[in-house]
Image (cartoon, rainbow, N blue to C red; front, top):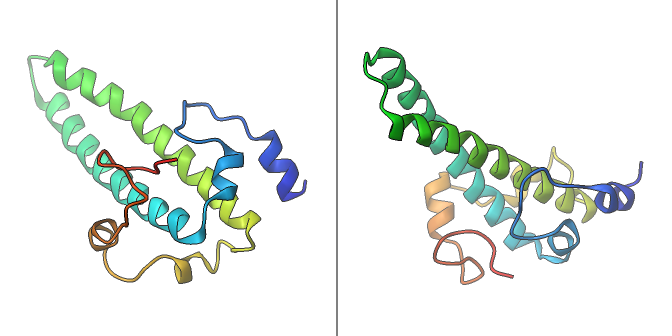
Length: 129
């Protein structure tokens, strides 16, 4: 299946802030910065999930708020990973191979990359279309 066909056929499972067609129109810098931001976010959420799971497993009294947060984070992580796949597909469409992707991600830790993001991101994070 061609890249164009994969883009046309892509149907997100989660509500996303942009479509595949819009992602393909974004520049490399915006795509790579958003990919770095999302990766950092997923890493942090997964760390939080481990802590929540340990606490919930060890607690005799189940905290409903923490249980709800854990369940909600599952969807947030799924949505962000799907968005990362959309961005990787858009980058692939632009000729960036997955092997060369590290070349397009700015150096430094992910927190540094996120701090260097330009005005193309919103205050809440993410791409502002």
